[in-house]
Length: 393
Image 1 (cartoon, rainbow, N blue to C red):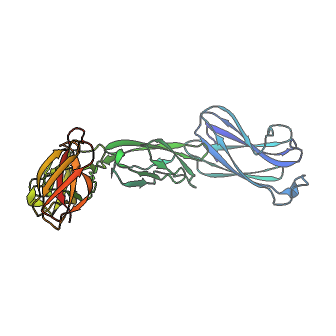
Image 2 (cartoon, rainbow, N blue to C red):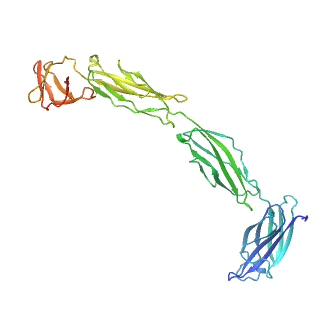
Image 3 (tube, rainbow, N blue to C red):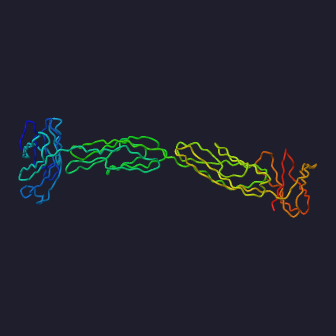
């Protein structure tokens, strides 16, 4: 091989090391450098123990591989070996080998017989991994995303690559061995634009790296609102029914909702913003079952909706009930007289305030045997009370 002005001298020495208490064959390498490119030397060492004076080593037993970095950016000596012995003493024979450093040298095999042992060295360069160009990633929230193949190593043979996540959105995962990125994108992650940076490191001599950087854009996806199902309602004629329709929106942030009635009895209303439903059935709805269907629309793009239905069952009697008299006795008991149809059963009900939404049964049901019925509320009168009579059978 031709030697030029800029050269690096590689010293290969085969030594005996007795520092550990037992003799063993040791190969050490020393490199003199002077502002040259960076090379690595991969050494495959084999010995013929029959030619060695080491009784413990059997023939063909010792086969070792190791590397040394020729760091030519800093002049000086770099020492490496399989043990801590000093390769430059009277025990070792040093062989100097020169190689061409004009550009990147061809792979060369260096052989030398030292102390009747054989040392082979291969000189080669290590190049950094090459990052794969990745275009902008467009994904939707609520989906799963993954990508691999972030880099490749062009060395022959190729080095092993390790991956390190430098910059990424919360929740993104990196397999440090395969280099696969994965991300389960939640509703809270969009819309947003994220920069992802991954460092790729090879295991060459010396170790080199490259950084791959790209953007991932998460788009907003509108999800349909969900109305909470209401149970069926039972009310009496002229009683006001009020229901607050509840809705949940999985979108973040939540969107504005608009409520409408798709189906409802005459006179029913719903607040378009709050979803408050109200209806006061009159006597024309006595003993009827009425379907109420509520629709809600969000203001997303495109708009999504949901519907929910429940029944309103109106009780009351088809027979005329007339309260003819209410008076308070000397004992502060309320006496109620009412006219009904004999043979039917009735229930007296009471509430404390006129704007209360419910009624409370008072006493036991009364089966009328005559047209006029008298009922006494034994509860002492305190403040105002309101009464009604309903037919139950």
